[in-house]
Length: 40
Image (cartoon, rainbow, N blue to C red; front, side):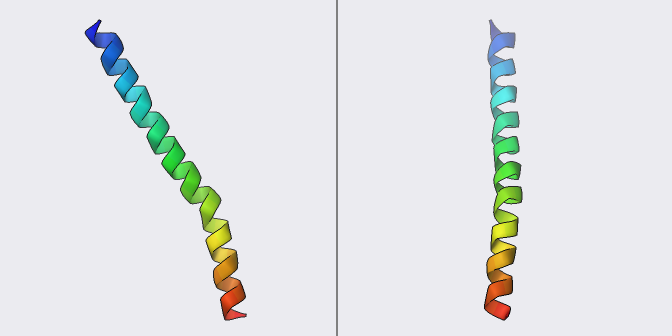
C-alpha cells in the first residue's frame, strides 16, 4: 500500500515538472516575440 502511494507522489511531481517546463517552453516564444515588437 505504501509503495503505491509513493509511486503516485513521484508521478505527480514528474507531471508537475513536465507541466512547468512545458509552460516555460510554450511561453518563451511569446515573450520573445512581444519583446522584439517593443524594440522594433
